[in-house]
Length: 508
Image (cartoon, rainbow, N blue to C red; front, side, top):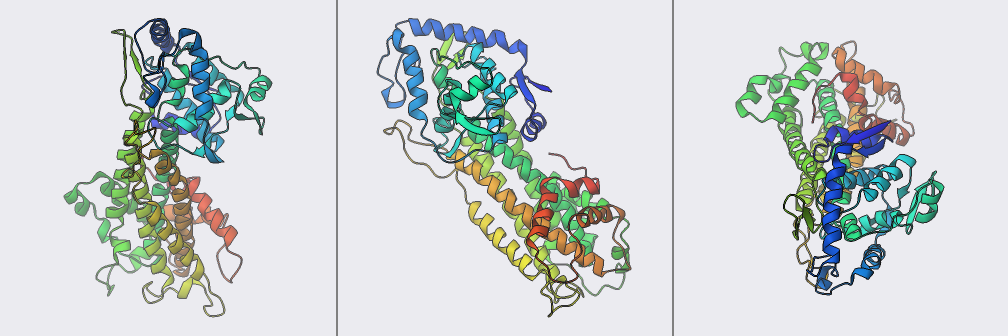
């Protein structure tokens, strides 16, 4: 299947579909005229005497050095090779594909001055499975994601490395095996490929997509935990949340009320319960998870705009014939969005961890056995699983410290303020994996707690969630090797199984 992208109108839903799948990607054919018009303006400028940055001049601090027309190809090739300075582990192939698709969307806007051949090669590489090897470290998020994007461009010119058929090989060999020919870069084309925020944006988007699944799972696990400790549903009364007005809070409270509707456990203690109020981790779930959802939605809007943006330099304004130098390559919006996602992920995990701690503590869990094991003492139950959630929660707190407030001058002080968006976005993968484990363990604990309430049963929708969990994680009756169970429960989060089983309808 081929997925057609309309430059300037790609949606989060489309981009997530591309990231999670292997569809071929093409630009809407209507984009071609604009791309070729801007390429013609660049070709004219390359032949002229007026200095145009990156077309007939050097780069960065070397922008004052004029380049002869005969050296254009060498200038662009040298640019790519000299900027291939990335280090660290390679970017995951799925995120690399997303990065390439984002570059395709940006070039398709017709403001970068590249020939259609450049777009066609990216399309062909995606269609035939030629995936450049992109080291993840080396970008400071301005002037664009230079090093990571240079490694992508290197494969396009037959240099660097790429994955083809599941094997890493020289970029030129990968292209040849796929029946493709390396491109010879024309004026500005190397600069257009490496100037831009597509690496940072791709990493931030993947963090957003995983964070959203975790947020959906957190709504479900919080409802499970509420029933497990026989918590009150009074705090999710819609009147409370309408008075505050935050949409995320309203959505979470509404969803939780629907999930808990029909629970025999809830009805059993509606009257005569001596507890006046539950701890905050139960009572304030809509306020905390809802605020995180609002933050994710805001970050999502930012990243959707950035995904459709033209972020290289200089830019070609075809309507006026101008070639303008600017700073769209500065990834500050992406850095802010990544920091916002990180905050949301950390807080969803923080309150979930307190629910886990509540359930394993016999002094707080309303008559559940210590550490949720039927034979405490002989068995430790979920004692250390709770410790694991504490460790991961703390790790995420540290990782949530802002990256966007950091900066350091580079390129001989020409690039004297940078965004640090790249590692701000990359850390989200580690954080969302941590969160999926916290929520998976919460589901395990809540399932144990609800089973202890038998013969009382939870609601039909939450029982469906428990059935999906029990298909991969059996009830804990005696101590056993828990690590595989924890991983399977975490996978239920990352694969959106809990939300689907519950019929949850909360969208980004």
